[in-house]
Length: 142
Image (cartoon, rainbow, N blue to C red; front, side):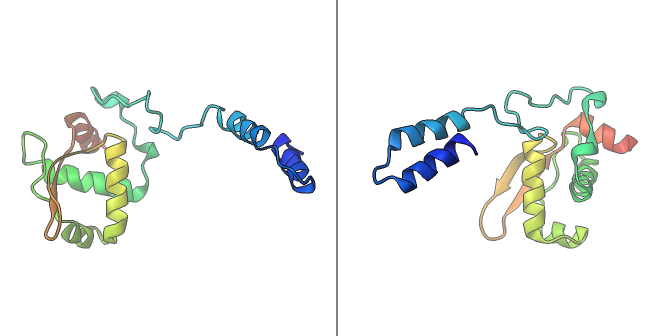
């Protein structure tokens, strides 16, 4: 039995609770180094200076299709920025719910695969996304 469980059992069975010892055990337990999922480590931000550093294996099928669709929207622009993207139209074209697309776009932003360049919030809102050139090049070769 762990130290925390034994102290909790002791606290429950005794009439007085030693809160300091319980808090110390929780602090000791939470001070362990956290484990990070891919791209979640704040000290390990991915660098996309060349195509070889880009790996799409951490993307789900839907994330990849969203990234590819955004990249195709950018293909005509030299600066790599899409025209305004309306989520309800984008969701209809991909066949995914708006809520799913919101989460996927947040994940792609967190992974630095896309960057939000301009946006309008509220009713009738839209967003322009920038897809970095190395990512667009890698998507064209896939």
